[in-house]
Figure (spheres, helix red, strand yellow):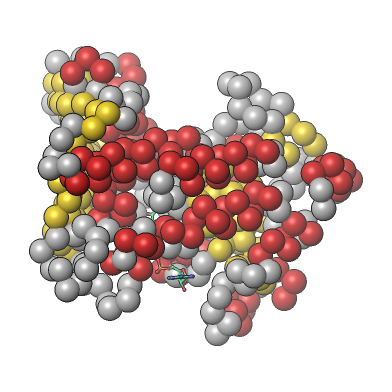
Length: 363
Ligand code: NAD
């Protein structure tokens, strides 16, 4: 279907074109739907154990379709989630979601090197796209995803859970309102002690593996949302001790971000060591989130004794409901594609810095 006939089709099907402020591109909103239909693309660990269960709790969207290359998973998922035969696709047939009015959103939960290709297939099929972090392999891929979404008038949203989490939103507000004064220093680390099986995609550079892509984006995104600023230069060092497990990717990384005005942020990430903290120092005090990236139990405290207790809601359900609501109402999503692109740019610059012996690299 070309763009014009697709548009007519959607209007006939009860949709309308939304006009939004903020210069956000107009998108096609399925106005009459109570719940948007989501198709999960890639049925691995995160889709199986977090997103699909989350979609049982959502108010504004529900699981209606799957895209998988593993035929043995199909009957299990169909039975568990009541997915009809017509809403089951594989990677070769996924583009046919264009003709399926049950599906409004495709959620890309594939290895990182596949994010761009399948996000673009989804956008070209006229479906809104939610894509997991890190957005893609490099800036060019990220930009191609953004362009495809704009051209096809669909939303593109990155699965950064934390920006939907209430305590994280509180510290974002502290930063904006300078509740504890101006930020003077940020420190954050994300990591776990992992043993990967041979062949695991996270151990291959060509598949977007490595600690920096996988875990480093959490501190990087946190520095940006905590300060509301973009760095001007970065430096870093990627390291690997267990070279037999990680033949061509980083097992850990340390990095530094320099912001306008001289503010510095110090980050670390690892596949060898557990770490999960975000500490912010300000002119008039401090606050932290420890842990700051867990699926539940994110909590914090401040220098004035304020406690930020964990929020009990299902994080992924809240994220997908916020993202579905943005589509239904034609408002900008909390985490647009541009946010994912900014992180990938920083990741690539840190890699470049490491290659150059930890030189500062402008971003
Ligand atoms: P996973 O390995 O468990 O799942 C990946 C799925 O992709 C599997 O079902 C696999 O069969 C399929 N696949 C298709 N083609 C493949 C190929 N060529 N090579 C390898 N697998 C292929 O991974 P996961 O942990 O579910 O991660 C998937 C995505 O979700 C990643 O981008 C990851 O960064 C992201 N993720 C995000 C969070 C979060 O908190 N936001 C948490 C975990 C994972």
